[in-house]
Length: 268
Image 1: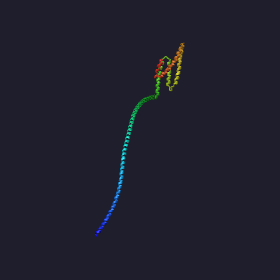
Image 2: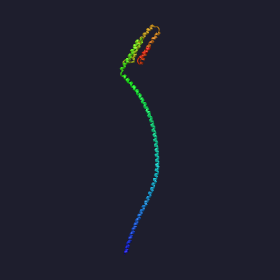
Image 3: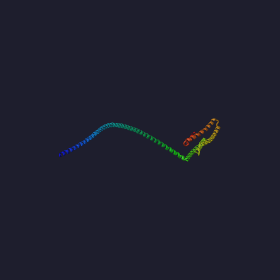
Image 4: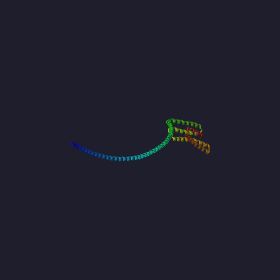
């Protein structure tokens, strides 16, 4: 009886163990299936990842190739730009050198122009200095009209006195006639308001006086001579006196000190 009880207990335990084993097997099986499913999913994901890696490698390779080509293009472009910049810089430097050369020539020309202008300015300054001195002299003379008038009066008075002494020593009346005309001209010059009409009036008055003396001499000469030729000579003499007077005035006005006038009349 004990054995059957033990046997029943063993069977019961065995049954329980079997049921537990089956339950665990079922659980393990479900877990295995779950793990398998997860494995399959992971495999699929791995496959996808591998394909993506392949695609990425291909894209990377493509990008590398494109990068190399792009790098080559960029390098070529940079070389071209470098060449263009070097050429432009070279042309710019040549242009600057030419401009500097032209500027140097212009500077030389400007220096020559400045030198010439300086010389001309110095010459103008010298002329201006001389002109200024002349103007100062003129201003000085104009500032002392009384002194100038006095010197002129003394000079002309001395000449009149000298000519009168020479006329007194001369036997020719026409010398006194010429001297009277000269003295009349001097009085007009030294007057407060000199005018040419005063000189003409004085000359006309003295001319009438001279003509009367000459006419008297002519009448006496005609009375002692019956020839017509003598009358012509007297008329010629009258004309000569007038010419002498005109020549005297002209020569005196053109001379520096009036001495030439005396010599000219004496020579005639």
